[in-house]
Length: 108
Image (cartoon, rainbow, N blue to C red):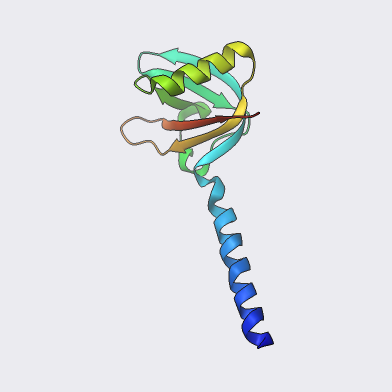
């Protein structure tokens, strides 16, 4: 019985460790350190760097597409307010060289 419980606990720990090890492949927490606006949307740099799926994005920029109006509005409002800390969820670059931000979770 002890062996079965130990095995079950070991398996649960392995699953949790594997989950957390991959958690940062698509998001980054930090502060917006730079922002620029282009014809295709807003581009931001985050103090924490780039998530794994954004490696190769030129100069550390991440794109928020113009058509994502709610996301654009919240990021711009946060920038103006000076409340630029949060977590940025991303998708790897597909049609452009830049990875795209698809969610922003502002800190408190």
